[in-house]
Every structure is written in structure tokens, then in C-alpha cells.
Amino acid sequence: MSQATTALDAGHLTDEAIRSTMTNCTRGEAHRMRVPDWVHGTDPVREVVGWRDPKAPERGWLLVPLGEAVVGLALRATPGKGVRATAMCDLCRTTRSPGEVSLFVAARAGESGRKLNTVGTYACTDLACADNVRVLRATPRLKPDPGLSVSQRQEALRERAATFARKVLSTAD
Image 1: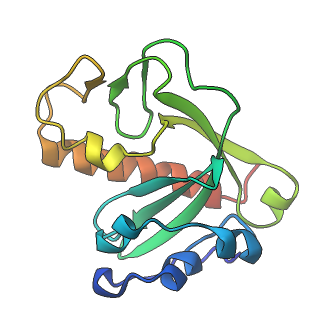
Image 2: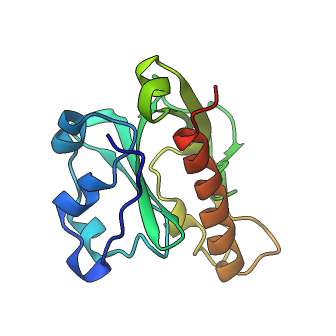
């Protein structure tokens, strides 16, 4: 798919508009993507939106704001039940219980991705990073980045997700 980002209007967030943001998968893969109903009520220009595909459990999707536009990323979770120890998500910096952080890989966009070059990151297995940064108090299973306000954690999530998206979009090997 195209490396260009797409502007999305949160009020008109359709499946087709979301599919048009996908940068590192084929049109067929984007067409088969299942978009949960709750995604339509989000504003991906302001926050990172992630979900797993219930029909293809190894598949995940991430909408990442880059300026006033959004880039969509197709992710693949590594096989297994996630990291077997307590681990921290690289995106939201939330420490999660064993099995709740997984290694996700994204094919690079363009020719590099067609040559099977990938970029990886450890992320919340459910890709609910945007929800996790809103947690006000740590729980035994979920410990958000300490010492930061919710708005600071949200901004840091956007920055780290944008850095990851730029790596996926990069043509450098």
C-alpha cells in the first residue's frame, strides 16, 4: 500500500477510511481487516488506536497519529502467549503481568517490506495502550508509567508510537 498518510475525520471514521491509512500491507489484507465497532468512536488523529483481529488472532492493527494525518500499521504477534514474565510495553510504558506483553512485528512499507524486512516492538498483547495510559492508579496487573499525569502519558504514547511508525515507513534497512 501507499506510504502516504491519510487525514481522517473522527466524525466520519468509516472502515474504508481506516483501510486507506494502511501503509505496510496489501490491499487484500487491508480489505480483510476486521474493524471493531468501538474504533468508529475514537479520534485517531489525537490518540493511538490499536486492536487485535478476532478472526486472525496473530494479527493486530495500529492507527498512529503523525501530525494531522494518521498512518495505519498491520502488525503480527509472535506465536505464543506473550512474554512469560512481568514486562513493560514499549509504546505505553505500562508494566503488565506475565503473558500481557507480546512481541509484534510490522513489515516495512514499500519494497523493503516486500523483501521481508520488519521492525519489531514489545506492546500490550491486547494493543489497548491508549486505555492503559488513562489508568489513574496501579493495579496488580497494570502499572502505568509512574510519576506522569494521564496527559503526559498520552503524549508520550503518541511520540513513541510515531517513532515506531516512522521506522516502519523508513526505506533504510
